[in-house]
Image (tube, rainbow, N blue to C red; front, side):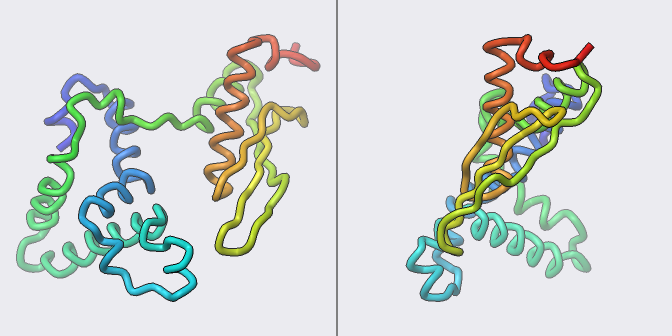
Length: 185
């Protein structure tokens, strides 16, 4: 489906585009469009904290609905039924230009950059966890050779790590020597 719709993209571009479509953000957009949040049976606490609009719940719900359609139709139709459903859901919402839809993976970008220049991996560490269980906030820091390069704060460790990597990339962009300080010869 993507190769047909975006023949200008190479394998890497198609892979990034696919990843953005099936990411939590991409799937939750589809679930929101289909109003799947309104179909959820959730507890009072989840209801009070906006559970019907939570990206993670919506994305999981969308995946579950797609899996149910596949499982219900696989013996009779094989992949053709789920392929039709996916085309019907995704195609009307596909951007004309994949470029603006592909979300950046700052962690991968930073990892590739650090690996290329220094030949070592970056590491992430949880610095702080705060808030009640239903509204946790995490602060993650990214390190290269025990030196902190950026911090990020978000509703999940994954998001906080992405924001930390983005900050590190901005620091490196502002001062390319930032990455090469402290014994990188």
